[in-house]
Every structure is written in structure tokens, then in C-alpha cells.
Length: 243
Image 1 (cartoon, rainbow, N blue to C red):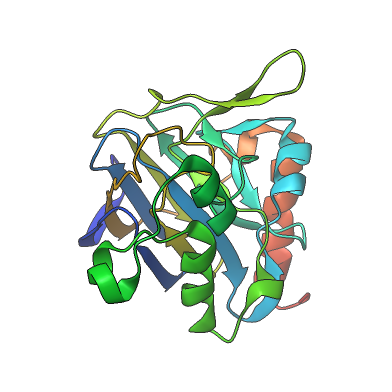
Image 2 (spheres, rainbow, N blue to C red):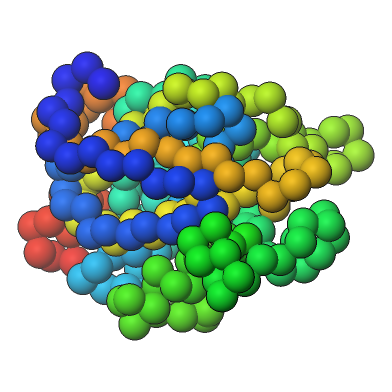
């Protein structure tokens, strides 16, 4: 990280979950502790939990199938929750979805319960999100399409999606700058298309800090005209003229 200050660091092991309300102007840097990490991520407006991450609009307005440095993460109100200001990988998956119990069975990953293994249980991304969201009064109906940081999924000529196993080396990092107060829920459960023979446990290092506010010369602001309009929507929101 170059121009951002770091105020807090922690480690989240593989197969775990975490959440926090991050203020406007803070940064979240995630670093893969092991190769092949995956971080499922959802975002909500803590002042209005009905406003949440909208990946279809995020892709549509930035004319992209993948997300990387220079891209913004949009809410379903046309505002920007966060910008990707640093990225070592050049590709984060936005279409692969979330690991659920059916995927576990199909892969032959043997379910291990909390009673049998405590925190080493084989947690699904679906259940991880529900546990975190319950802390804020949210549930299954509040789930949306999630981002999969560190993972890459490509489509062939027939439209079949394929997971790229060697995409993320250990030490790869991505940094988000928050453009409005945002409730973040994330997990380190495997990607739904991960072909590993056994349930993989790949954690991430988390660093929280602050960054200067962006202007029209910022790489994310200037990426496309739609992003400039997104930042204008944020400015109006922070003036208190819109909900």
C-alpha cells in the first residue's frame, strides 16, 4: 500500500467469516496468506440496509466481466460503496456465486460439523454470510450476488464457466477504498467452482487504514463516465439531499 495509512491488522483463517462497518475514507486491504485464496464479499448501507451491492449494475456500467484496479463497486441505488485502488491480480470473479451445501455434496467434500471440529468445521459461504448478516438483523432474503475476490472464472465459446486454479499466488493483495459508510460481510470459504479434492483452507490477512478522498483525476473516478456519475450520486447522498 502506498498512500494509505494502516491502523489495524488481523488474520482470518480459511473457512471463516467476518464483518465490520467501514467508514467513508477507510481502506480495506486483503492479502492472500495461501495460494488459491477466495474471499466472498457482500456490502450494505448501514443507514439503509435495503441498499446493497449490485454486481449486475457494477458490471454493466463499467462494461466488464471481471473486476480489478480502477473499477468501482455499486449499490442498487447507483452509488459507489467502494473503489478498487490497488490490485496484484487483474481479475476478481463477479459471476461464480457462493458455495452451498449442494456444492459440497457434489464435490465429495465431507461435511464436518461444529460439534465435531469446532472452528475447523467445513463451513459453506452461504452459511457464513447468514451467520454474519444475522448480527445486523438480516437473513436469507437479504442475500445478493456476491463478489469473489482473488478468484478467476472464465467463459469458453459455449458459455461454460471454468475456474482457473492457479490464478492467485500467496501474497497477492487487493485494496478497497470506501466512498460511503458500508457494512461489509465476508468469508474465506472456497469458491463454488474450486476443483480441489479436499475442502481447502486458505486464509487472508486483513489491514484497515485510511486514504485521501478521491478527485476527478483518481483512477477509479476517471475510469469511465459512469463512474464520474456514481461519484456525483455519492456527493448528493452525503449532502443529505437523497436517501
